[in-house]
Length: 151
Image (cartoon, rainbow, N blue to C red; front, side):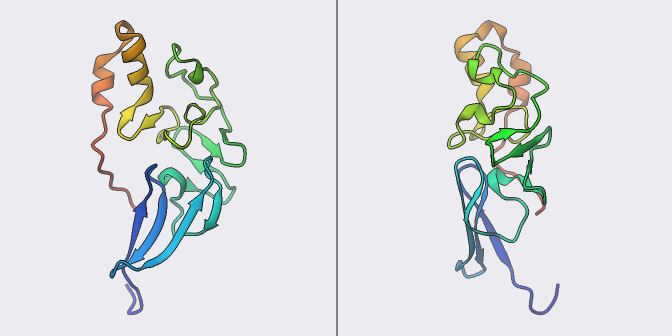
């Protein structure tokens, strides 16, 4: 680390996206605002992890692990390889992003919609199709709420 390097803290919004960078004293250094579908509305932050904590590449697409998302059109650019919940009509469009509700949900893997730390498809199946649930998978995919990833 150089002599002029300063410690900075990256803060997330309710969807896990980078929204504010502060210095060691807590003063605002950078901030960014997004449209509901992930386009940058104002500002910038010094990391490639942006909307919902995903990496924005130089093509303007976000990489979600299983596939790429285009914030210009608010859709994935390739179909989901699985239909997460056939009982939920919103999941039948395999290009849609987060059941068409980007203010509430995230999709960290490109395959499953989450609200906070809960898998939405599992919750939907549990409420409307409890006999079709794979409880072992549901319990094993729970999230701790604490994430550690390098910037």
